Image (cartoon, rainbow over all chains, first blue to last red; front, side, top):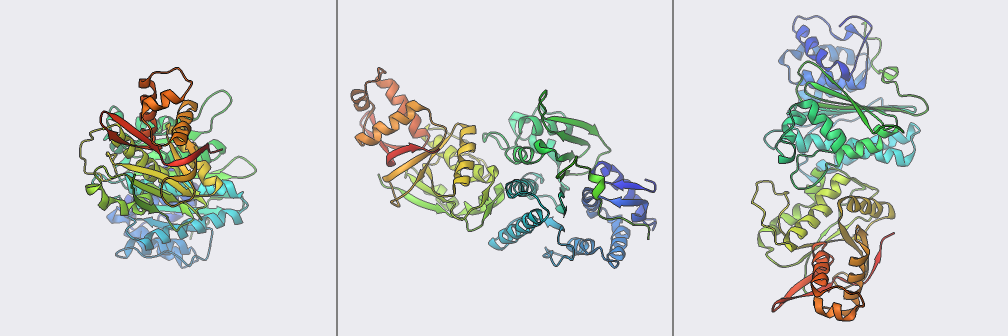
Length: 293
Length: 207
């Protein structure tokens, strides 16, 4: 990667290459002019599993001293044993949270509070109430998908969620280090024929494929598309080496998904961004700018 | 008919995701092993709920409906390790409370899946004074439901004699069996016949 690059979800494979540079002590963040939320989530997801990411972690901590507090809290989350509540953000419309199992009423309450903060921030940013409820619902469903479907042995894989909301614009990303859509779906006899991650993504997007046998269509992604993709939002879904960008239906054709392939990356990542008033442009709202320190 | 009753009443405003749903339903799990044929009313009270996702409904209300359907149809389902897979259980799920928006979400989802359930008022146990049918129920089944409610516990041949419709006893039996699979009526054996009974005295379609 060179200067003036924007790191976002489409550069997922780049994260792996970036981390291979971290071990040599070369600063990483200054390679990029700016960083979108989805790029941040992707980078951190990959870094979480990479033992050579210590250099990146140190770099982020140093950046945190100049005010990027959410990075500092995020690093604390990964470092501390067990789960630590994430809060006290100076920038209320930016939050990250580790996705873990729900084991108690307290966990449900904390989860609910996270959703309420997101909902309030959407309202403050000018999004209509009904639309915001739909967006929150979609986000919570994607988070729960990590718990329900990411792990091979019943326990969920590590995951992370982040959102960024500014006036009339929001983005959220949900990423995990799990087995991917293909491995999950082919457990069901209905989807055992799927050949690869690309076919798995298309089955989810067009046929609402679910790994649950005998319980009909999956509901989580259906809700995501209904609330977001069909209303002009940018929706990208990555599962391991396949990336699908979902376009809303038009008068002439139904919902379209453009499939592309990248270098193998563990897990899955759903990224969404939406703007009121004009065509959504993810790069216009990169939040971590001026990284040339 | 006597029912066991279990109430699911989450105290959160937003009900999303299968994981939270399964936690809310956890109280039912100990019952699975000893339910046998004892009909169990599962009441869902959504008062105070602002939004509910289809995944949550699928893992709660729809799960109960499908398990009840499996029981009604005498399905033998292989034992699996997943406690939330569909299994034959004598469950009768009803919705006790919820805003118009929430009942509307339930109605949409059930219609998509060809399912139906009752939205009930007083009293606290069957027979309910009145109930609204939420979801998908064709006009013939709704008429059969209302005829059965007005006549009280009946066998198929009794409904044939009461009605002007020219269908066979077998046809009435099929309709009653369909209502039972929808968990809108109960049934008990009387010799070679089934006696069917509604859960409510009056029925309307939820609009």
